[in-house]
Image (cartoon, rainbow, N blue to C red; front, top):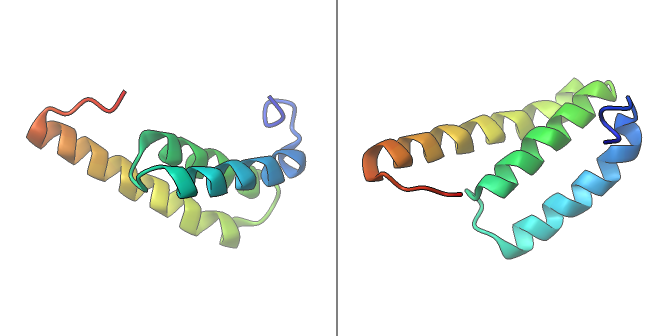
Length: 79
C-alpha cells in the first residue's frame, strides 16, 4: 500500500524487517522470500538507490528461475 502511494522510503524499513524475518524462518528459495526481495528491490529503486536495489532484484530473478526450473522438472507446486 505504501508503494502504491509513492512512499517507497517509508516502505523500505518495513520490507527490510519482513525479509530478515523470512530469512530466519524460511527456505531461502521460498516464494514468499522471492516476493519480499522483489518488492524491497523495487522500493529501493523507487527511492533512488539502484546500486542497492540491483543485487536484491538479481537474487529475486535467480530464485524465480530456480523455482520455475524445479517446477518444470519435478512438477512441484510451491503455493
